[in-house]
Every structure is written in structure tokens, then in C-alpha cells.
Image (cartoon, rainbow, N blue to C red; front, top):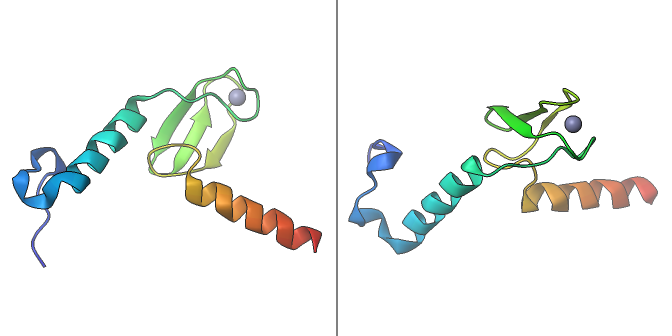
Amino acid sequence: MARKKESGALGVKYGFSLRERYVRVLKRRRARYSCPRCDTGVLKRLSVGVWSCRKCNYTFAGGAYEPVTKTGETAARIVSSASQA
Ligand SMILES: [Zn+2]
């Protein structure tokens, strides 16, 4: 396994798709997300996967780079449908 370099220094060797994804992740990290509880507060990323609302202090676990991920939505759907059964 090659040693991981500083991700900001991604050269040409990782190919197009990975660099594209990296840029997209950076954009998402800079993006602002509103609180799922009070809907007006701005979410702050405390650490990887942990988000907190500046207004109501609602803290929850989410995606590493965005509060709600496609995986999380799918998991929530599976959990809710399982509890209904
Ligand atoms: Zn809130």
C-alpha cells in the first residue's frame, strides 16, 4: 500500500474521478446546512460526523462531510420500515 500523502497535494496520479470527488467534498464542507430540528439554525461541524446547531444546540451524528448522506437516508428508511413491520 502506498503511503497517503497530504490530500491537498493530490497530483495527477489518482485520476480524474477521485480528484473530482475530493473537490466536491471540499465544497460540501464549506456549504452551510440548516438544522433539521429548528430549521433556521446553521449547523456547525464539531468533528467528523458530528453536527451541532448554533441556535438550538441540537447535536447529532451525520455524515462525515455533510449532515445528511444518501447512506444515512437509506439506513433511516430501512430502520423505519423495519420498526413498522
Ligand atoms: Zn437548530
